Image (cartoon, rainbow over all chains, first blue to last red):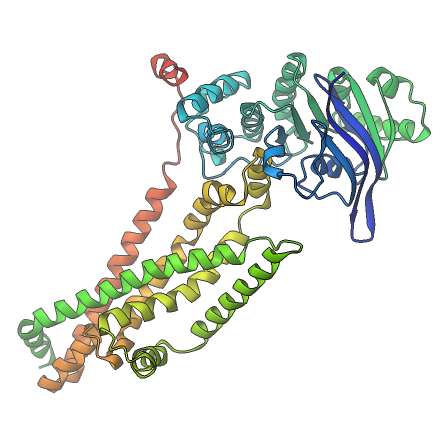
Length: 251
Length: 247
């Protein structure tokens, strides 16, 4: 299987605090990988290290046979092949919905405005936001913003899209619409790497689940294995905790 | 009676007042625009993330130091003294006999630039980190991020402060009378020197200053509103419109 990104011996410290310890991990083409774990386990940091929003302290990130942590490597060139969807959406506040999806294509991919708008309309259609192209971000609901953010990432036609807790900042009734879009994308064969607290969703759509604990990958495998029959004690503990919480939410 | 004098002074001297007000407004306007440009450049340079090592770090540090000195000096000294130093200093040091109007614009511009640099820096710092991250994640470099995402938001945010600076400049050009710029205050002094009616003449000047600043603030508020656009948006419900975009 073709590896999109291959991470070897990745370390990340903030001062004396080691957030990631010797991470070895890769994403294959067409695969949907979910990263789960408690807050502070390093899963968001890992995601942010992959597209270098955080600078790793050590290790290698291999992309198309090259270590992109080499000094000579062009960051912007690498990043345009990786999509990113943020917890806080981060739509460009000064642009309307259409331009949010167009500006990157024109400036980075050097597409013409006509071409870029066509691509944008296609992907805004996929996420069901093509009728809102004139709206400014502040006029949209959280769920709508996140769907536009997904379309913005899709427009760059990246090799993989990284989702950093895409539903954590949403009101409960808006979580569904975003997860639905993501599920459709997963089924369409898009390569996705998802940091999430939505266990049911992770179980359903993932080809592989990675459980992180205290800055290391504690366990990874098929969702059936991780959720139903984990081999590690701490995985079992974590799942028990989150299950209790989700039950409490219904009380 | 005073009111009669006010009217008499206005009727007899209105062309002079008008020319003085025009000069004041022109210097304030050009000075604010140039000052804003200086401020944008300086503020942007001062917010470039510091490279970790190498020549670029040394270069950026040097430029930042020069900018700091510029900002501190021009914010920390009165414009009336700067006017004297620049106007007479340039004659003394380089033998340049500066045109007073050009000197006035230079003084107001660099003075405004020093304030605007800090306003712009504050404006850039107020932009959410997520905006930078999203632009970087799309693959934009620093310049593209600044130009397409950050700067438009900064300019919107600093517009009220820039308007404020413009109003201050309309009033503060009065200090330029020390280098004989024929702006409104200089004209008023001349008129009062002829009529010997100080209260009435300067009362007229105050009214003219106030009219200018009041009109300018209203215009700026209107521009701000226009820039913010409508509170509502139009949904694309018409299918021909929809298909036109998709083509």
